[in-house]
Image (cartoon, rainbow, N blue to C red; front, side, top):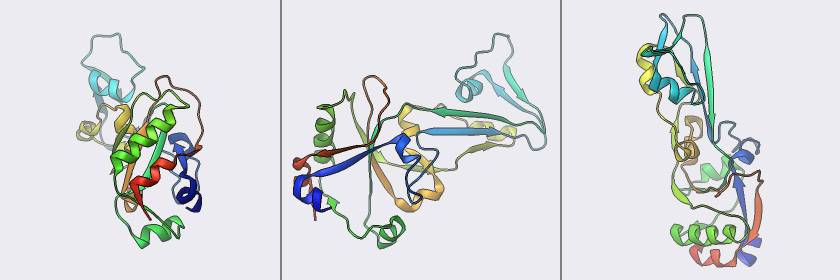
Length: 206
């Protein structure tokens, strides 16, 4: 906090780093979705469209409207993941409960989130080829997505880069998170970075 107030020193994490972070914020499913198909009573049939959403790299060559059938007592799993990217996370509300659960004793308010994210994106772009940025609140849902009946197949949706970046397990809903995501022009192997961006302070209140 003192470094940020003095020099605008800030840590920008990545999706993959957040999978390995300390327990309070560690989420092994950051940037990915696991789908488990476990028929309870009857076989589950996936259409070509639903199969493509579940297994995007599997392409059936036969002319059958039901591209895949998972029989009772069988389990089919799929993991869909996005390329690593920089992320900056915050909470949309101040809460002593959140502070205690995160093990934090101080905080600052971002009073102009768009000025903040614009400035942070420019700072990252000075070192990396950032394609764009997006800022929005996180959506919380069940992970993994478990399909047990034919009716559950409707829960399988086409996944996008942004959907996977902004969906977390319901067990993290207490964080009330908003995040800024900065994808690359060309995906690359990265790690978290620490930057000095004094201009960020003008968008914050201490």
